[in-house]
Length: 453
Image 1 (cartoon, rainbow, N blue to C red):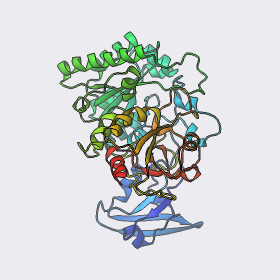
Image 2 (image 1 turned 180 degrees about the vertical axis):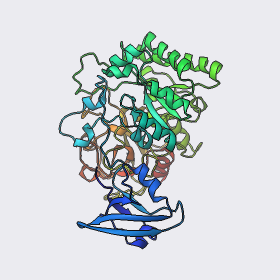
Image 3 (image 1 turned 60 degrees about the vertical axis):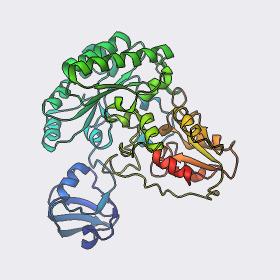
Image 4 (image 1 turned 90 degrees about the horizontal axis):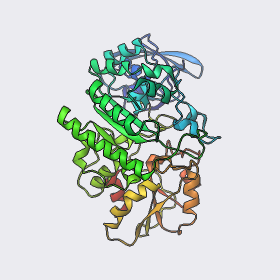
């Protein structure tokens, strides 16, 4: 177990007053050794604290008096101080298995940790969940959690996870719901594996066995060019249409039975199927926005000034690795003031850099402005290849190749969702790009503000 290390001390905070400094390791709080940032936050909420810290190899004790619940004012370096609970499934559709070699080691870590589900929106299969975990989740009300369902048929689920415990681990989902824990489910649909009648059975099983679920998102598998799985392939347009139609049919059934839609298809399915996105109200509050459900609708509303940003900070597939705030994806990541190198004049033409899916959504919005000085700059994702087309998986190498062919002196807007602590997934940074870029928060109002200058 590693001790949490202080990365920053807030100006005027209690931590600053008692002399806590960046770089200090917090060995214990009131004699307790926190296992994760959840426990750490609970411990430092107490009004009287005794902190054992290590500074430059010397152990010191700091006594703290503050109001109950008053923030200590010390940021720590990670979410988990003990070992991450790794995943022992071997899903053929797992994107971690499809990564190219040579990336940062942390990107290859495959987790199945309920704490990261609570903090960052990661999905857990519950195959490593225990009675002790259930007791903690229920006692501390660690909610919401995200659970990968994929199939409610035990044999199909076990086969998809390549883990015999996959046939029985959804019993923990039932237990979580029985104790009033808010849970969001996910079904990753793989062609000829859990689509068609299996998907129908799964959605029927959800209503029959887990109707208390807050929502269920249905997403297509992602296939990179680095996969070694021969069975994996992208959806055809007809298959995408079939999935969307199945989801819509079950939305109607669920509204009759439960009074709500419950299940939603990811935006990617509508793009693959060539079907218009549903009206914003059909998303019932955008509960699964972080999983790509309703992103296009919220972006449009925010861009057109029809809604403020109510979906919070965007998570992503690698949201919890380096650069992620220890407090989780609900913590601020960007204040819109990212540094801009060699900023072109504000009146210069603007290129909005994004992935292929983002381009399909943004193009009509930018066209609606009636401006000839604004354009979309779509980036082909050759680094991951395959069906990878979301902005959150853009890397510097591909962006650099695209920008090299773009005019100098123009403004280029880059969504912050493709950066973690100022770094792309391939380890490059915006300063490495051949054109200066302006990093903009990934939401419609911020994009509109940047375009308006």
